[in-house]
Image (cartoon, rainbow, N blue to C red; front, side, top):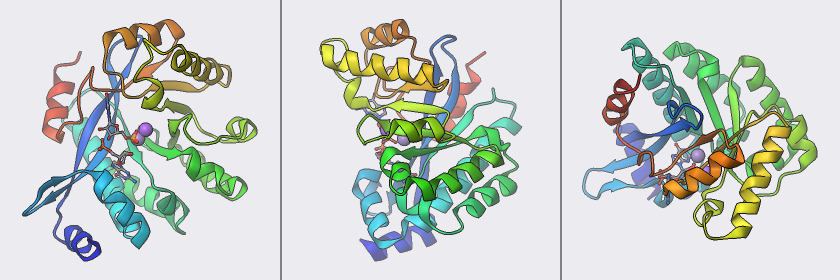
Length: 252
Ligand code: G
Ligand code: G
Ligand code: MN
Ligand code: NA
């Protein structure tokens, strides 16, 4: 697997798909999340769940992650140059990648090469990534924030967050993990967790996004709670760059 991953990188076998991030007040797509896929010459499409952990264990996540950042920024700027409605680009960052020395330079390089405004890039970090050695991470988070890059906490609610750090970190968005959204309309505990995250986010002046929204009933409840944004199959599955461009083109 490791040598296959190395070859995949050299031979350009990775591609990005994109999933819309929707503003619940306007119903408009205001951002997209980049999600990697491996187009294996013999095996076909391989999903990230099957190779990201190997990439993390072998350190290959650094060059792969660098490629993702550059490609996502390039694509966001290309859509903008085509005259499509402006969207921000959300990119997942693995713990190892975030902690590599020179991560800030990689981000700066991706922005400089693509010409993308820093404020249109959002880095998705997990609680696990930022809360581990929180004091050390504060420096990296602050530097990214000073560059103008947006930060979000992915899979929120599944890790452990210190509320003290949540207050201090320059993170602007919480992404409610989809495990709390799955049964939102039938499980009162999930409803309670989701609405607590929404209230907390609002109190801390953060944007809250619900992941994994599949049913209109879930969307109705999230709107009532005051959730700002949503993502999920109800709106669209992750699609190719062309598919995403078509979706943006149809939008006012
Ligand atoms: O793409 P899919 O919808 O199957 O994603 C599965 C998992 O892989 C998710 O947890 C997602 O965050 C992760 N993932 C997808 N693309 C990337 C990427 O570019 N980098 C990292 N580190 N993780 C990714
Ligand atoms: O961990 P992260 O949130 O980065 O990864 C997003 C993952 O969630 C991707 O694998 C994406 O395909 C998946 N996903 C996005 N929307 C939905 C949804 O509505 N339902 C389910 N089950 N998965 C979703
Ligand atoms: Mn994510
Ligand atoms: Na997530």
